[in-house]
Image (cartoon, rainbow, N blue to C red; front, side):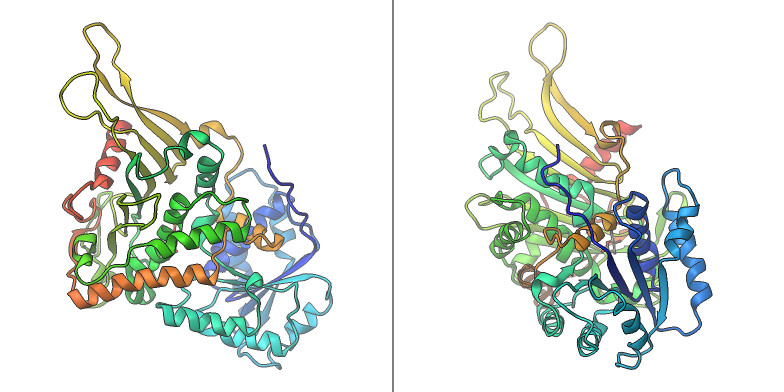
Length: 495
Ligand code: BG6
C-alpha cells in the first residue's frame, strides 16, 4: 500500500562538480541511469559533468560506460546505456571565475524553466567558491538546489563555516546534505517498522528494552582514502553521521507526519538529549582500536599503518561507544554503537534487546532470556524476532529462543534500488526527509566533540586488533558485548 502518490519529476538539469571523480562514476551517474531505465526520469534532462582536467573527454566516456555497465544487476537492453550517456556533457572548468563558468551558463540558460541541481562532489574546501561563483554568474533561482557530500567539516566550527559559505547563496530548503545510509531500503523500513506496527511502539522504551546495539562492521580497509581517513578516523567517518542517524531513527518520538521538518525536529530532540562525555566517562563509555596485519579469507593483509604508509598514527579504525539518551523514554537504556574496518566480514545490524519477563513461572532457575528484534541492514536485508518457544515433547516445559524471520529477498521480488537512486529522486522531487538539516549536524558535532575532547584530555589509548578478526575482544565496554556473539550465532546457524 503506497501512502503518497509520487510527484512527477519535471525536466531538469544536474550539474556535477567533481564530475570525473570516483563518487560520480560509482554512484551518481549509475543512480540516475537506473532511474532512467525504470522510467522515473524522462528524456527531458541534461547532465553536466564538471572537470578540472583538460582534454579528458575520451577517458571520461570510457569510464562512464564501464561504471554504468558494472552497476547493472538486472537484464538490460544495452542500447539504453548509450542513450543515457549521450545526455551527459563534460565541461572543463579549471577555476571559479565568471569566464570559466561561461560555457556552463550558455547551456543552462537554454532552459531557464528547468530546476537545476548542483551536486558538489568535491572537497568541502571548494563549496564556498563554487556557490559564490554560481551566484555571481546569475545561475541560481528559487528552483535551484545544492547537494553536499560529506565530510562536511571535521568539527563544529568547520562544519558551521561551510554552512555559512553555502548559506550566502542557498536557503536551507534548497540544501541537501547526503548521508547515504538514509537512502538504504532497510533503514527507511525502520520508520515503517516502528510507526506502522502498533505491536512494537507500545514496548519501545526503557521499561521494556534492556539495550540497543547498532553495529556497522566492514571487511574493507581504508583502500585509497588513507589521507582523508587518517584525519577523520572511525568516529568522524562513520559515527558522526551514519550511526547517529540510525540511533535517531530508533530513538525518536513518532513524528506527527512523515514530512521533512517533522522528522528532522524529532531527530534533533534525540541528538540534543545525548549525554555528553568528559575525560572520565570516555574511559568507561568508549573504546578505540586500530587494525594490525592479519588474514582475510586466507590472504595476508596489511596493517592500517602500512595501508596509509606511515610509521605512527593514533587514528582509530574501530570505535565503540556506550551512549545514553537523557529523556523520559530512554532513561538509563544504553545504546551501543560499534563500527570498524577490516572486521572479519561486512555486517550491519541493529539489535533491540528486550528485558526478560518479570517473573519466571516455569522453573526457579533464573530469568528467561528477553526477546530480540534484529534488523539486519546488510549484506542481506532481514528482520528477525527472537522469541522463546516450547520444545516439543512431554516431560515438562523446556523452551529455547527461536527466530521468526522475514527475509526481504524471499518476500519481495522487486529489485532493491541502491541508496543513491532513492536520494537522487528525492532531491529532484524536493523531498528533504532523508537529508540532514544544519541544526542536526550542529547537535551531532557537539556530542562527537565531547568524545574527541575527552579522548585528548584522557589520552585514551588505542587497542590493536588483528585485521580479519572480530575486532577488539569481548572486554570492549565490559558488558553486553553482543556484537561478536550475535555475528557468531548467525555464522553457526549458517554452517
Ligand atoms: C562512507 C565512509 O560514508 O560509508 C566509508 O566514508 C565507509 O569509510 C562507507 O566504507 C560504508 O558504506 P556502506 O554503504 O558500504 O556500508
